[in-house]
Length: 444
Image 1 (cartoon, rainbow, N blue to C red):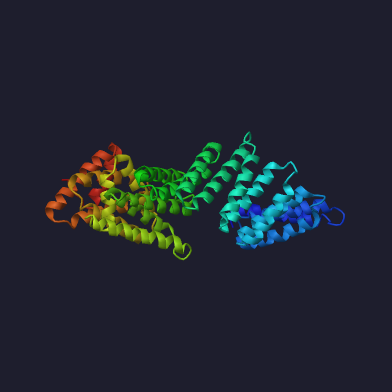
Image 2 (cartoon, helix red, strand yellow; image 1 turned 180 degrees about the horizontal axis):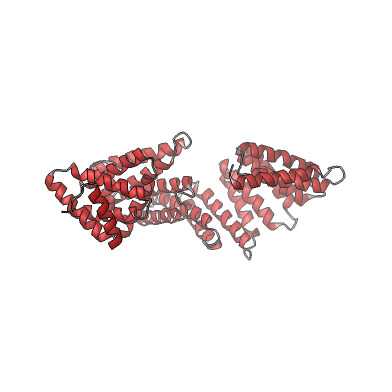
């Protein structure tokens, strides 16, 4: 169990001890308030089975609801209803969740609890969306939006989240008008919540914006190129927050959609970049846990490979990648290699050497100038990574060069030597050249 999970469990245990010492008969309201707090803590616990946590939270909410009478304690009763609705929604019980959210909104009305009413309406809109009742969802979101206090940071974040959810509901309709309305909602949401205050939410907005723009590009041919460009930019912006290490599933989803948008451009560079995106997506997804997402990404990869062959861009996946890197701008070249090599050098020894060797062999198929650009970027990135990555990459590169015919080997060795000189400062250059010499590499 993580330290955070252990601390959360200790907090729950402390609340349960207080509850046990607070008799319902003589101190009912304090007893109910503690049960409600325990329910919230269980629902949000990072430890244990999430579904069991939600079921146990519901048991605590039942205790609180038995005390908080809607006639005499309406606000407290509505709060517990809203929390219980969220738990049922988390358990996949959309019908029960909707019933509780509807009851919560009715009890909150007229109680001078605008933001709590807005939160319940937002929850109601979400569950209606999940049920496919878009009209009811939009009504709920529309009712919630005027209730948020835009003078407070919390109110602005709540309004932005509701605008985002309304946009998603609009986009689900799939029409030109609905997608345009969704893009408008995303713009309003972005203006409501500053990126510094809510970077994760802004990344979600960027991703949703990319999805809507890509869908709209298929419906409006005259705007297709511009909308695809906007879509690609939006997905790339979301990936600035959805880092592979911090948000692996969100990163994979954004990479997959970026690949789809790049593939839709239809040009060779876009297709090669799309292929790289699908490869990164598949490397993150476990087909046993993310079966549908994995299958979609794999189908996308195969479609892009077929499109590349149709356009005459033949070669293996490693060759398509090294060609993409060699043709990219210097900044793009480093970014592409940093992402790929960071993943490869973290693999177990044999898998790392195999993957690096495939790239090295593929790169030797480039002409001398392109190989030099590739190796220069490769060495620069490897110097930023753990030392075993550099050592493995240099070893497999020397081996790949040795397997070439004499003329090709000579050209590749020249490219490697020049790349080392261009990529590194004096001390690093000496270090790398000494290591290459220890591998039997002779400077041309």
